[in-house]
Amino acid sequence: MLEIKALDLADDAGLRAYADVRIAAHPGSSRERIIASLRETNPDFGEVIRLIARRDGEGVGITSVGLLGGVNARLAIGPITVHPDHRRQGIGTALLERLLPELRDRGRDTFESWGVIKGSAGEHWAVARGFHVAASRVIQLLTVAGADPATWELDAPRGYRLERWIGSTPEHLLPSVAATRQSIHDAPATESAVRAPEWTPEVVRAEEAEARADGVEQRVVVAVEEATGLVVALTDVPLHPGDSTNTRWGSTMVAPTHRGHGLGRAVKAHMLRWLFAERPALERIDTGTDASNSHMIRVNEQLGFVTDREVVVVSRTF
Image 1 (tube, rainbow, N blue to C red):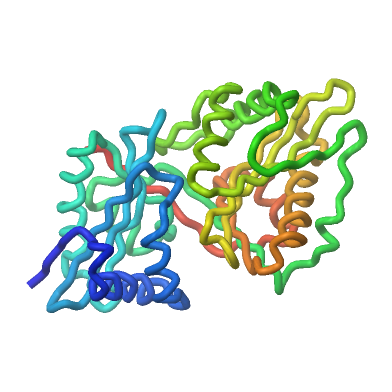
Image 2 (image 1 turned 90 degrees about the vertical axis):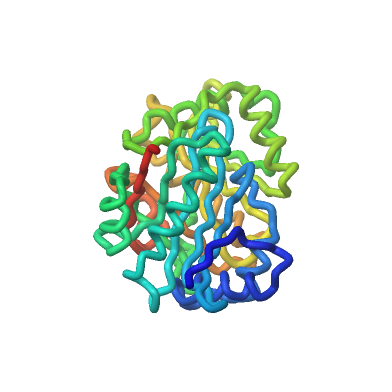
């Protein structure tokens, strides 16, 4: 008989069963690391709902769904994963049906999953259950073992200089950092329900304070226009407490009037030199880019990233 319950972090058997489903679906994962991550606070979400489906005590399906805040306070994001040996038995559907009332009770009306392999059975399953494909993304991966650090030795283009910091934006750069972050709204349009905030100096400070409270080391590299002293390009990498060997890139943006000068590549190259100099244990970094953003995909390739997979965002309003 199939039993679906909320994951109890005090239940060692349940944690092992949860981890075993993850490992079966994503070979190479460590049970110990998965369990440790379940006990860590995820600073990206205000709350995480985790359910586990078991049959005769064996883990056969899981879901881990995060609740966003701010302008995305009606949205939940996360995967539904079924053990490969137990697929096509209605387990994913049962998890979804149990999950949706939990989301409604928390004021959510939209559910998205961002890591569904393009063209996979998972995509077809989601579409058959009322989801639509809201975006396509390319996941690129840089591994230290396969990287050529010489590709990161880039100077700032003429007329610009690079600056960097951890945590708080220098006060004199704060207004132009907010303005540059606002240019993320020029990113390729998708049908995802995720919305970027309206970036103001106050919002930048609030985001920084939230990251500090969650133990996130926010590293930022910017390009400053020499003539004006304004930030016109920016990239960031949020290093979470558990990010010792693997991490994920944050965001990169260039002000519209300064595009075409190689600033995006310059700030990302500087970030890579900085990260690997001060975090020698890092082994890999991954980044996701909208599939239509061929320019940024090409920049990443020039820096040593290789395409690992293509995924879709599936979205359902309920």
